[in-house]
Image (cartoon, rainbow over all chains, first blue to last red; front, side, top):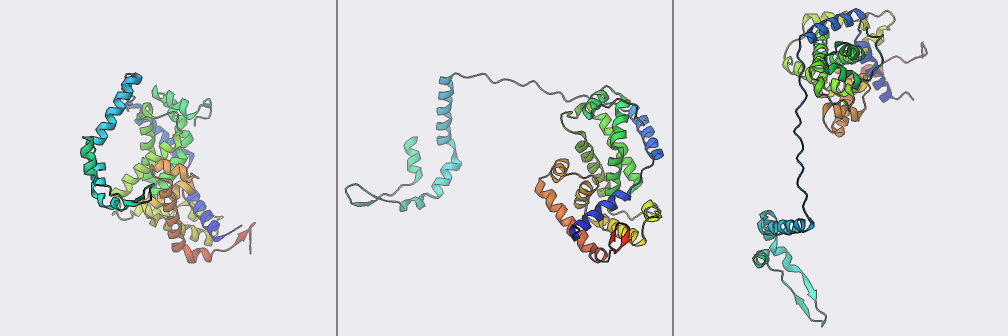
Length: 120
Length: 198
């Protein structure tokens, strides 16, 4: 169907296609020029890719120890998580719990700074 | 020019080119010259500059042959180099006035003087050409790659190394600009079907 959109597309394509005419003489002349330049041009060498170094394989025990060490390191040294929790510490005071014996108690979840101190 | 050469793939020709085989460069030149020259000319609107950009593009192909990934198609690499070279030229000559040669070239272009062109059609094409010329560089490149070279949006995104959404957006705004610029001209266009005017 010849919609205005299609007509515009067709017109753009036709205009661009008919904009440039290339003669065989022009192409031949361009090739001769290129050939002369390329003959005097030095090609670049391939990129030197450094050999990939294989990381030594760890035993299951070593991996486990490393994992625990990473977790502890994250908990003890990652300040971003701590700061985020510390900033929002007052927002978690609103949790309410009901015990099995029926009495209602409000448990205040204290600031994470306490929690952190306990871990240390 | 290289019609008698065995039909080799682009990757095989690049491998030969790495050994400084200029015949391989010739076959690739024969294969891609028209596309590259047309693209450069449509972006820069200067045939002499387009010729220089095309030369430079193939010289880079020769120079960087060892660094081209032969597992990927060659055409996007050539288009990328062409667009980058055109961009450099356009940004350097942004403030330059239109040269006398360009005007003469434009007036003498075959499309304007083709005997079989209807006067209205030639006028319309000149309007469209001018409208494309007035698009900003990014929109013009997308229009040229899409309409002249028939590249898909994904291919253009790969050539320009940008997201597909960006290409879609540029193409959309380019078409809107062209539609806005050509609104009256397109509406007045005579409807021609099978050689007979309705």
